Every structure is written in structure tokens, then in C-alpha cells.
Length: 221
Image (tube, rainbow, N blue to C red):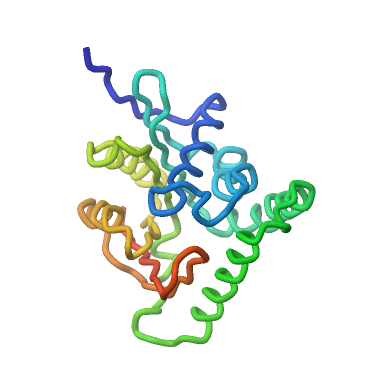
């Protein structure tokens, strides 16, 4: 007997599952350990804002009592940035010292890659690095599914739930960012009617060469 896939609002009991899926799929669907060693710290950076400060826009997909995917959403980037800077980042940095994160070579490689990515985006001017108006696209989303559950319209169901929320609140548009080499992710958003808004340079700590992040957007109203 097949169990139905249920898409529902996030509940507190889902927190550990969301954090685990985030770490299991952090590197283009592959585990976080490809580029960073501490799952606790990474899970806080990736999911804490949504699970602890913005639960209203967090959706999960459940199969046979198990969370198999999630969508984290936000309708106010300024609020996201404020909470990250004032609450989450100071806490994460403090805890990271005690967990020995800064003694790990992977951490320093990742920090170097982040700095190089930022410098390329600031100092490299090209037609690829164009900006989009966040007045037109004030909301953002991030979506992750466990391996083995992709390509089954589960992601579409999660996105539809979030877009219904945005439409009800009068939000004009939503955007999401995907690595250019993540073919599945790019195709997913294109099939949902998202269009390319921007393309930015990306330096990866565990891979050679220059990659790109594509920002996709969709108008709601």
C-alpha cells in the first residue's frame, strides 16, 4: 500500500529533520562534509532563521511519517539580514570557537572561497552580474529534498504552497538562487516558470575553477 505524500506547515518536531536534510544536501545534493566539517554550525547558518524566527513560511513534505523535504521562505530580506547579523552570526561564531571549528583546514578554505567570491562580485563588472529590483522580488525561498525523492513533483507542491501564501499577502515576486552546475535545480525552477534575473561568480572551496550562481525569479501578482 502506497502512503500519500503530505505537504504541511512546519512543526517544532520537524526541526532535527530539516537540519539533517539541509546538511545531507548542502553541496548540490551531496553531503556538507564535502566542504565543511561541523553539521551543528552549518545547520544553524542554513536553517536557524527559518525554524526559530520565521516559521510561518516553512513547509515540509512528509512520507510515511518521515520528513523527506522542506521549503524555507521569507518575505522580508531586511528582516532576514538583521536577524542573521544581530542574533545568529554572533551566536554561531561564539559556539564555533568552542567546537574547534577554526582549527579545521576546511573552515579556512571555505572562508577564503567566500572572500574571493565577494571580491569577484564587487570588482568584476560584466553583463552577467546584473542586479534585479528587490521591490519586484521581495521574497526568497530555498528548497531541499532527500535523495530518492526528487523528480516526483514534491518540490512543485512545496513551492505552490509558499506561492499561495505570497499571493494572499500581496507579495509581488519571489526569487531563489541555484548553482549553475546544478542542472536539476535549474531545470526545476525553469519548469515552474521562473526566469533568470542574475548570474554571479562563485568560488568553491572544494572544487577548482570558477562557478556561477543563478538567481531565478517569478512574478506572483
